Length: 203
Image (cartoon, rainbow, N blue to C red; front, side):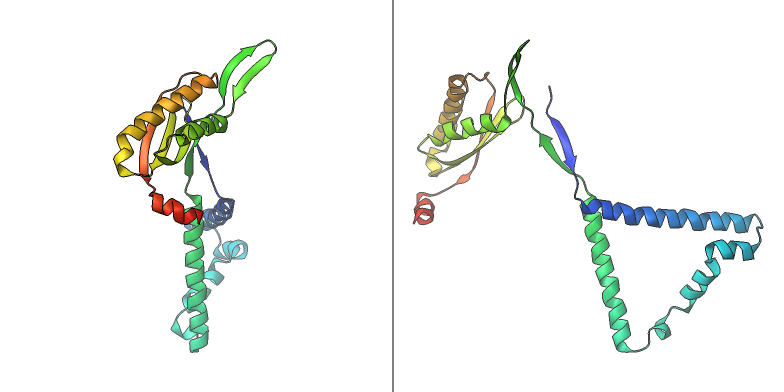
């Protein structure tokens, strides 16, 4: 089975959706009022249920003279800036964040139950096997359902090719040693971790 991709969203996304829903409802409502005015419904009745004249008169009065004094203008500008930043932040929270959904590895299944292995257990076995190579400074594994990826940092640049091949062999042997089915092992060199840095961290 192909590995699935899931999306997660922030709880703040619901606040953005609520604000968007209110704006949409207001747009639909006043769009309906325009339709009523267009079909010659009594404007006084439309005013009573919508207050469109009051809103229009308030917006018409807004201007430089409506905010006398520098303090009031600064306060209005600050509120507008905060509202802009808030809406931008909520919009960013609305963006989906896809991630790979890891699944368990099924080893056996019969009438008594099923034997499965958690993805993290497979990754931990791969990381432990890769770290046994003297040239490997650190390793991170990820089980993808159809293959196993191992990202390694090595201590010396000259050991790159030999270390990658050695890590692939060690991880493959570890899978067999733990009675796990053979998986394609993809080893990627992600960086160098010099011995001097390791000694400084230990000290």
